[in-house]
Length: 419
Image (cartoon, rainbow, N blue to C red):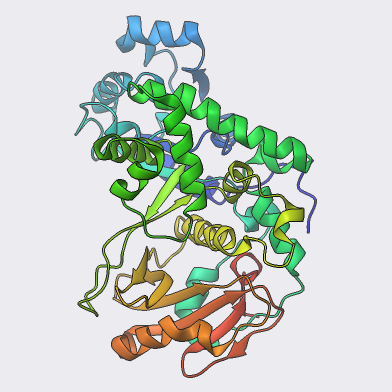
């Protein structure tokens, strides 16, 4: 593994931001706190000559609120960090870029889905491009321009990958996660950092977005969600577990999604079975956060019978979600499960209706039973199924029938071109 602790890590989003600035008046880089947004836009600002303003600074925020029309004219090109601190500023930005419609005028960052937080339904429609920045992908950590998704649709069952990554390496990646300030720390310090990160997120950002009456229950809900990775969940079942009203639980889930702590993976909508379930899966955006909240360490997870499976599934799901941001295919991500218990962990479907089915198994010896859901999918989809993969922790690609392959999970970040 490449030592990434002392070097700047290139982000795949950098090219997307540069392209957007070339032809769009306002560009918003949105994502979780501490995912690297400020570092990314500062480097871009140095190259473009944009002036930096942070709404985390009380004086800057006060100036923006007192006279927003003058504030947005302070510099010809502006970077405004943490725009969710004052989303009303978007109205003055809209007014200015309508008056002077030159591209690249404003580069914004946000730690929440800002246009959903206030009554600003059409503030910057047609004027702004939003680029999401996630915690680091494994490819970004390793310095690889990973292309697993696009190669899966291109190669289907012909995709091949052999790997030297062993089980211990996978476990280390799961507990490390992708927050830049977390993976550079020693394991015990990392766990403390990540649990404090969640506490600060609730106390700061979530409270800012909505009045939270029961902070401890919110934090308990987050821990429960960490333990539900890979499961279908509903607001009603979660409310019983944490002692909240169902309406409150649903509201809290929306808030946690807005601040990029969780991601909902919806049920696949194509009706190939009348007995499919419609509940979403919920995964924490970062596997390191999930492991820290569940007090799962490297040593615990490597023990025989350790609870690696759900955390590994969440890790893989979020690596794939990251890659969708720069994939040429731009597939949707969902899951499939029937009331009879037949399931496929992840479904990728492109705009042509072509499907890649993915099962995630924390085993180095995949078996034919691991392909039960994928065989079900193949029978019902026919030619629309490009391939079904079981991503595992072993070293080799193995065939398990027409279109079905077991592939080392490290293909997610090690496949950059054809092997």
